[in-house]
Length: 120
Image (tube, one colour):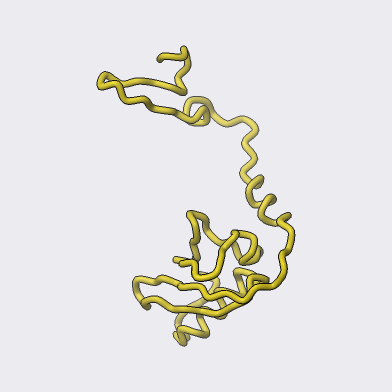
């Protein structure tokens, strides 16, 4: 422990490890909704038409044109309509972009998704 703290450790080969404090101590006042609240409070930008590629291992890639002002829920409904599979329920679909799950009550612009991005 070079800094007398468990958050920075060195193993026998000299490799440094940074350990988050929440892994050492139980979180006492961790606010899980902070990031969601930050996304909800994002200022609405001007409308932009964009093309997004939706990658799905089972159905293949689908390119969709949409506004950045639609909700993620509407985005999922449009995807189901574009794919044309009646067995799909948009409520069971989960989209991910840039390492985050896209929540139904937020907007496309909330996640800073830009034109020609890929959503999984």
